[in-house]
Image (cartoon, rainbow, N blue to C red):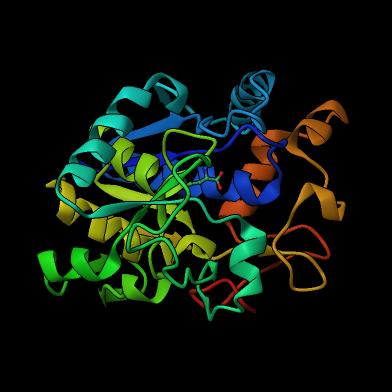
Length: 281
Ligand code: GLU
């Protein structure tokens, strides 16, 4: 039985790209007689707008989808803390007080997620009075796990290459977990067997695979679907003028008909579906 999920963050309204993502996940579960889960990823305290979660539910209903909702991330902080503590006790995390500007000033190399941390705080030379994040010591982590593989339903078998990200943050200064730790823990807790999400998060799966190995979590399969792109080839986003699903609902558009067109690959005018697994056209 396939268990998929749609895991939106309530920091902005959903748009067509989210609708596509939810439909893909929903349909993959349905085709296997499985379960489709909704998880609100509201770990981002300052940017989270709780009222948006209700809008998200209305959007999914409008699209004609049925789902099971699992607990939101804000209710699971203790599990993230416990996982981080375990990795800390095992010597796999270190405290880092560097600010973005400080890291930038060192002109570090760029990785899949932006700047790769140059390791300034790795040897304990941080200021104990400043707020700290916890970073994964990638070298130690990989020495612990050895080579890892994972499988994407569309792209086939993958060799995990989390080292490209360097020492990623697992516990943020301002939140009890980073996206990587929270999503990995939650997918395991929710029994997700097929992690379905956009190709823009393809690279993140290398890290998630590593975290599963370090934390002894079950290993799902992944399905990174193509992205809807605007006429400039950029991912759809509200800030670039892509109308939200809530706007479309309010304008009286038929959500089920829209969902049906998306399923058939009929994308509204001016929008294209990315062809490469990494979301480029
Ligand atoms: N919460 C993430 C987002 O809204 C999605 C995370 C995921 O699907 O793994 O972009």
